[in-house]
Length: 277
Length: 277
DNA sequence: TACGAAATGGAATATTTATTCTATAAATCC
DNA sequence: GGATTTATAGAATAAATATTCCATTTCGTA
Image (spheres, rainbow over the protein chains, first blue to last red):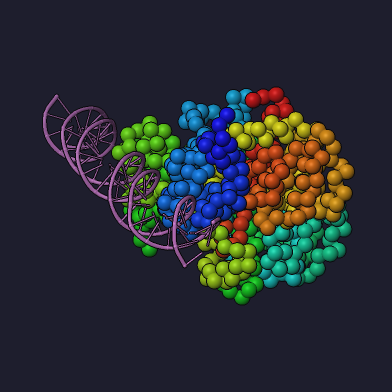
């Protein structure tokens, strides 16, 4: 075994790069330390950037960044970039052969599954624009912006949707209240005139959600609904409905379209309350 | 109002590219259709591939792929690649800037806002394929599939993510436990050997999440992490990390990539427990 | 402060990669 | 079925990018 060189061997994994980056933070000279610092926090830029870009972003000359790569053990930038590009390239080597049968079964790997869900997400987002009209969304945002308090209701699959909305509305300082399952039986008592209800319910529809929304509606409270189906019970009495269909993979659906829609809605509500628009 | 030309203009968004790709599938000549087909399913490869690579993967000559880019409305491959690289390169503004940004661009309508969030969703899904490797996801699914109980931890923005995962795992009959904020101080007592922890934490990172995950890790429990940043504290001790970056609109982010990833993960875990794969 | 060693930035060079051109092959129309 | 347009693949060229070299500066040490 020869002298304990700091580098010598070419890093083979991202983990190894990280280790050398952290180790080098102390011993590297000024400019190279700058490179290490920036690179450590922007690893994701490596595959899509040129040396010059990484150098400029790190605040050094291209040749300095070059020496930085070599100090890490690579022959140059290309070799380092190759390691990071491989992360992406290895992801799906032979997709085209399997087009057609996307069944979630034995021969389908995990990466394939992710590719399928991503694809389903793209489709869901594209169809979102078709089912949601500009004016409808605008009316809903306007209606909800005038509420004293926005009551959010959603169970099961819809719970994540309304809870993300609750988080965002809270951050935006829009008064809202997230109704949990346990408190729903008598939640009616906390909903007053001037409030609005935003209820999300996907097929098969939770009776509790429907009931609470209907009770509110009966008392003259405006109810806005979000669903994934044309025959949602909410549409029988809701002031206005939103539809977000999710493409499915092997019978499973993500929440891409729904959460994109509710996120938009929350931001639009805040925008209107701020007097703009 | 003039007729909406199919091409002519340079696509400015991923959404537009997707639309033209889907439209062109019918009208394009043979080789260019091959390009469209492959590219549609491998959008994430564009930023890290050369024309030759994309051409070879599509089964055509480089010059054919070149014409394909031009048929889409780009001047060439570089221009198309630039659009996809930009998504990674784009700089994310700070938390404090959000309301300011919102007011600044509030003259855009609600429908425009939805289009922007949809576009951000497309980008996030593309970036997901860049940061998650086939093998990494596979290892994680395998590791979590062997757990006695999966403990889900996530606060604030990450809460919706873990709660949707909890719902799905429950439906799939995979033993899991969702940890809420209030119970987290002594939650350590409910996590035993043979369990695994799945912790989600986005910048700025919740100390509670990190602490509970670290405590578990110190006790020999396997911890898997989900974050949106290269420098998440979890990566210091987690067995394995997942990164899901979300593109943002006016400083606001949806949860498209994160939930797509966790949905995939849940289904993959179940698949492994069922003995397939 | 003066010396040597190490580090730096910009310019020169080599390599890779995008793009265009052209001859040949299909497809389409009359 | 021949003529004309359109598509294709490979070779030639142009552009971008990585890499090296070297004169100059900076740093550490005596």
